[in-house]
Length: 324
Image 1 (tube, rainbow, N blue to C red):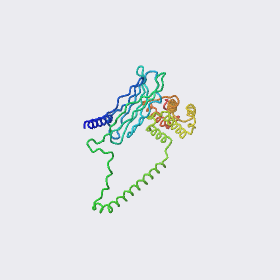
Image 2 (image 1 turned 180 degrees about the horizontal axis):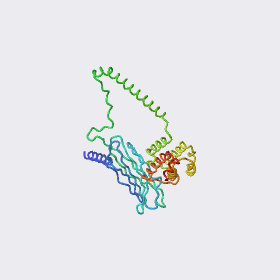
Image 3 (image 1 turned 90 degrees about the vertical axis):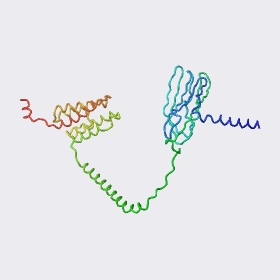
């Protein structure tokens, strides 16, 4: 009888000792001669779909060598995505760190298996060490409610006979009216688009419209400064070509300045177009990055150039009267 009780006691004690690791958040970091390997989670309990961070660090004595880096961990029931890898130095120790984003979509308690780290002590053979295990509990999002992974699909809701009685005679005409309205709106929009396309813009109207669209684009916010000012120059050169018939698109700024001498326009406007094109060239080729105030001022000057180039030159009589 005594032996039977002793046997039952040892069986019970063995079961308790085997179950203890399941209730520990993580086992201690392994410290072997020349290396410390540790795994830790940002949170030991997370809700379904909530991200957490798993961090594995390996500290080596100076002169030791980490072989093959830090491997991916085994974590059944959990999803791991690499986040960051880096290396640092703490005194005479080298520290290697690797992190993952950890998520799960099934209720329960899960374990990140210990990771085996291969290393070589200076002048020694290849050795291995293991990190501690990490335990993660996945909880339901709705606290206090019955914890289920996914709710069952609800059955089909039956409509009452009264609703069915009016559904067809009322619903079908409404559906047809809605389809007719959508059809008319679609073709009206298409017709308006055709009318807009038939409207011919003057060179100045087209240039101003394109400048406004360019200024409203995301090119500057995205840091695509060269692309912005290549387009900016192309708009102005297209305008000069259409308005004055000069071959501006394939010309340099210096060549355009020479061509503009033969154009009947105000000298101030000619000088201003040179300044605008020069500034665009700096941004394209000299890595000039205009500040917001300079960016706005250059756009405004480009619009002024287009307006001033359209201003007719004064007649000889008007010029003589102005001098006198």
